[in-house]
Length: 77
Image (cartoon, rainbow, N blue to C red; front, side, top):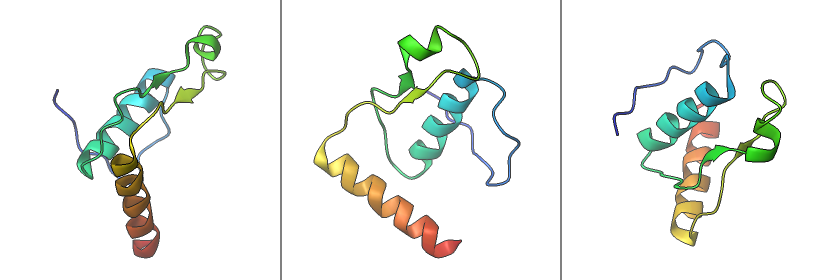
């Protein structure tokens, strides 16, 4: 799966699908894969802007790496 780089000041996503793909790419860039990442099927059925992103489940290792990536980002900001 090819991931495209993201830019911090990108325009807002125009669709739920685009938002999920951007999030997937950004997580991939810091070495994190959330296999269950998707659009919530219940809210997604109502379409944008009501769709919610379902981050899914992850193991402790992934949760720890995600927290570390967020901490690093908050220090850089």
